[in-house]
Length: 96
Image (cartoon, rainbow, N blue to C red; front, side, top):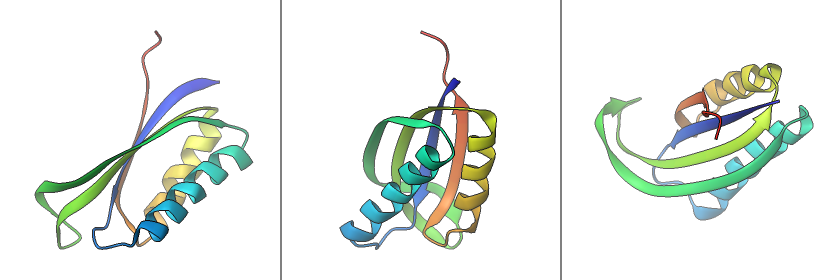
């Protein structure tokens, strides 16, 4: 298993419960596919450099997890479908 980091830009204006539910869904998807979440960090609302899906700002969240490549593909697919997510990008974390 490799170490990954996914940065999510979440649509602003969501309630705290909706944000928590979205991040819980991400964690559940990773666990269900055989990975394990090591850390979830919410950075808060930030202004975007350019509009994404007509939004000027977004809530940033970073999810660190250990998983295989199939988990990453499924996570990217599901995050691309969700209306709450403006952008999602997964990268491999460097070995420490």
